[in-house]
Length: 315
Image (cartoon, rainbow, N blue to C red; front, side, top):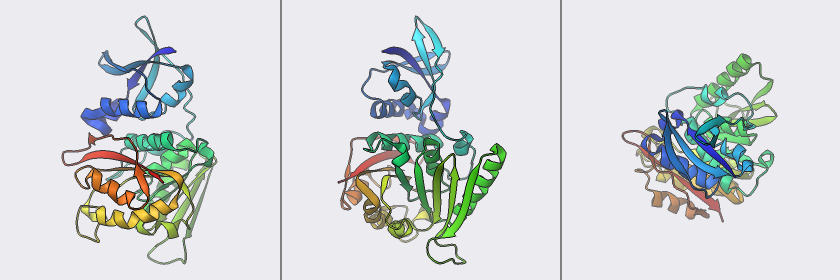
């Protein structure tokens, strides 16, 4: 066992605000295990201190709230050089900025939690879907982890924006890559079914212009190990019922998403705790054959949004 101190990233405060410590402890417990954690402040910086086997340290370095890991000996902190084994430069995820982007730290939390529950441990074999992917933050994290991924987004500009960002980013970093375009079905002027395939560092992602309620057709029923999504909060995303409550749309989506999951596949959803209520959200997916697992991460995102996370497994 090694005495260590985990420096909590100040960036995490931008994702979790007053609940940063609580979320950090929950992610640690879920992904690393049951170890005693002590919160200490040193030089204005917050640390979680614990004892861990050395083989746990590289997994610890991948947690969303971790800025650095130090050995702790007689009051002396010594930084540890740990290999997170991430693909691509960190600004592949953090470099893209746009209105409404899911916080990158939260997205990594969702992925870490999903992987902790996933029975397939070989990331090269895992397939991931974000059925409401926006501009692809989840897909970018998946590529950094070495996970093959697909995303669906109804905004037709999302596919074009992703292509623009990928071209600029690969040029800036002189990154070898492949970028291909096509359509699911027939080409059309509305760009419905248009997709971008992006491959770099041996990992592929695809972002598709389409509706999450038709996910099975868009993916041609290809089975996934993980479905991870931060579902939209605003009325503009749920125009069918002219309401901010996404339940009506999720009732259409849930059977599609459940059908795409492997047996024992995992679905991780971040949502506005006020609308929908946690019990209502779980009920929708239980009706589609998924069961809720024991994980919650309630935290304030803004003045009007208190976000939470639900994890479900396909029965």
